[in-house]
Each structure stands twice: as structure tokens, then as C-alpha cells.
Picture (cartoon, rainbow, N blue to C red):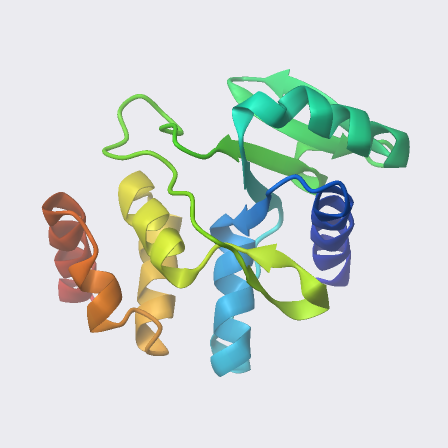
Amino acid sequence: MDQIIDVAARFTGLLEKAGIPVRVVGGLATYLHIVQVDPPSARLTRDVDVAIDRGRLEAIRAIVEPHGFIYRHAAGVDMFLLAENPNARSGVHVVFVGEKVRPEYLESVPESTPVRAKKDILIAPVADLVHMKLTSFRLKDKVHIQDLDSVGLITPEIEAGLSEPLRQRLAEVRATE
């Protein structure tokens, strides 16, 4: 757990210091939100996902590569691997704000102001995570939705801000709990 959080803190810290917007998304951001309200309910994933502006990719490479992150694009995924352990699982996976992660996804990655979590890591707000998890809608995303909902993080305001297709998906997840 500490290694994953350290990688996220290192990567996002470099970008924040350079004034480049970044936010941790995905399972790690879900974990960091849940651990703040109900630590035993938090489940940690094995990688770090971040949302950035595609137009800043080259600038990000220039900032993080001297600090041990190696850029790779493989199997349709942009990532920064750790030089000391160049395994895709140990790296930072990138998604781009304002773009769909996959063409078949209903909606694009939202862009809003990140919030601070453990170790001063910038993470996506819960509303953005719910949006992204309901958009991708894989089994692990459904489980993350259940986890967020079970600790009261999916508020009526967040639900009201979802598009109708995403509200339907949320209802589907809730029906299976």
C-alpha cells in the first residue's frame, strides 16, 4: 500500500510543483476517499491512474522522466513506468480529461477541481469518480460504486448531477447490493 501511495504522491507532486493540473482517479482515488470516512471498508488497487490534459503530455514527460518515470504507450494505454521496476502494474496509467477512455464509453473523463487526500495527493472529487466508474461499468467499477455508496459518499446531489444513463446504471448497481 505504501509503495502505491508513494508513487502517486511522487508523480502528482512533481506535476503540481510545475503548475500542471493532475488528479488521481480510479481505484486509488476511491480508496483514498473511503479510507477517510471508514478505513475498514477501503479496498486498495494495485496501480495508479491519473487524469491529465493530453496537450500537456510532452511537458509532463519532460518533468517526470528525470525523476525515474519512463513514458510508454502500449496496447492503447499511456503510462509512466518506474525505471527501477518497469512493470505496467507498478506504473502510473494516464487518462485524458475531456476525452472518452474508450470509444464505446458513454461519456468523457470529467475535469473539475481536485481535492487533497493522504500524503497531500490530489484526487478527483467523489462526483467525478462516480461518473467515471459508471461510465466504464466493469465489475471492479461496480464494486467501487458499491463501496462508495455503502459509506454514504454517493449523495443525492451527486446522483442528481448524473446523466440519465448513468443514473440508470447506479440504480442497477444498487439493485444488486
